[in-house]
Image 1 (cartoon, rainbow over the protein chains, first blue to last red):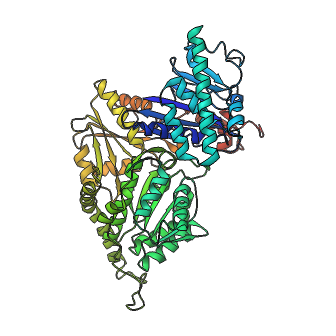
Image 2 (cartoon, chains in turn green, cyan; image 1 turned 90 degrees about the vertical axis):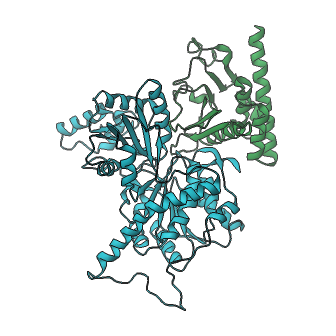
Length: 193
Length: 417
C-alpha cells in the first residue's frame, strides 16, 4: 500500500487533490481511498487530505499517520504545522516552493532521508502561467507522478479531464505536465551530480 | 458499473435508482452532500417523478415524510446528529404509524460540546424509537443496504435507518460498483402500501388508542420489527443474486470460527479491526471479529451463535451511555448470558477521534493478558482529565471543562486564565 498525505490551506483544492489522485489510481485499475481530515475547513486555514493506493481492497479507515509521500501545497505551512510528522525514512516529499530544502531552512531535517526523493517545485509560477488561479493541487499531482511513479502522468491528466471541463481542465493538465517535466529535470540533475 | 465515487454521491445515486417520490430534507453536516446531490437530480429531471421539499427543520423533514408516506408515496430523507434529535418526536410517529420511510443517518456526535465529527451517539439515542437500524462498514455496503432498506421497509411497513459513519464514509472517495436501474427495479417493485390515505376508501392513520389496545398495538410493532430478523437474511440472499455480490445479512463474521477473542463493533471501524485481526493472527493470537449490520432488531440468536465459544468478547463502541458505559455491549451481554465469556466494553472514536489498528492491537493484547478493565476508554488522555479534576477540587468556580481542557492542550490560547 502507498499512502499520501497532502497539506495545504482551505481554498487550494487540498481535498480535490486527494480525490483526483484516487481517480488517477482507479484509472489504472487499482484500489484507492481518498478522504479529507474532516476539520471545519475555512479559507486559508490548514487543511489535510489523504489518499491510499493499493492492489487490493483497502479496509482501514484510520488517518494516514506514516505517509510514503507528502505534498505540501503551501510553503507557509512548513513552520506552522508538523507537515513531516510520521514520514517514512524512504518517503517522498514534494513542496510547492521556488526555494530548495536548504534555503527553506530544512537542510538539517533532510538528514536520514533519500535526498533525491525530496524536491521543491515552483507550482505557484506554473499555476500563474497555465491556470491563472492560485490552486496548485492538480499541478503538484503531475510532480508526484514524476517523483514516485505511483500513478502515471497520463492517469493524472485523465483524472483532471474527468473532473474539470474547458479552460480549467486544459490549464490544469498543462500545469500538471509542467510540474512533471520540472521534477524529471530536477531528478536528472541528482543522477548527473 | 465500477466508479470512483464519494460515499455521499454513491448513496444519492443509489437512492435515486430506488425511485423515491418525495424527498423532504434539511441540510446538516455530514449528511448534506447526499440531499444536495438528490435535489440536483430532481431539478435536472434525472430523478422523476419526485418532489424535493425544502423544509424549515428536521422536524419538518420527518413530518413531510410521514404525510407523503401515508398518501402512498415512497419517501426518503437523511440527517445527522442534532438534526436526528430534532426529529425525535416525529421518528416515533413514523414507526408507530408503520410508515416505511427510509432515512440515511450520516453518524455524527451530539453536543455539547459541539462537535461535527463522527461517532454513533445520534442513531444510538434513537435505538428504541421503533425504526429498524442497519449499520454499514463501507460505501459499497451503504449502496447495497439502501436498496435492501426500501424493500425491507415496504414489506414490513416499518421505517428503516441506514447508519453510515459521517465523514469517514460520506466524504471518502472509493471504488463503488453502482447497480443498474434494471438490477434495482428487479429487486425493488413499485411501492404498494399496506395502508394509504385515500378519499375513496377513508381510513384513520393515527387513531387515539387508550389502555384497551395500546399495549397490543405496541406489541404488534415489536413483533413486526422482530420479523426483520428473518426477512433481512432472506432479502440479503436475494439481493446477493441480483447484484452478484455477497450481502452479509444480520451480521458478518471475520476469522472467528476458532477465535478465543472476538471483537464486536458496528460500522466503518470494522475495516480497521479486520486489519488488526490479520496482524494479530500473524503473531499467533487467536482472534476474530463480528460486525453487526442489524442493530435493531437486535439479532440475539445470531450473536450468540457467533460468540458462544469465545473466552473474551471485546465490544468497541462509538457511543457512551453516561452513567453505565456501553450500549452495544449491554445488548451483546444479553445475547451471550450464561456463557463464561468475559465481555469488555471499549468506548472509542468519540467525536471523531481516530481508531487505529495499533490501538486495537494493544487493546486485544491487554485483554489476553487480563489487563483490560471491564470499561475502557480507548486512548483516553488521563492526564488531561486529572488536571481538570484538580482544578475543580482547588476552586469552586473552576470554569467550563471544555474550554479549560482545550487551553491545556494548546488549542485555545486566548481567554481568561
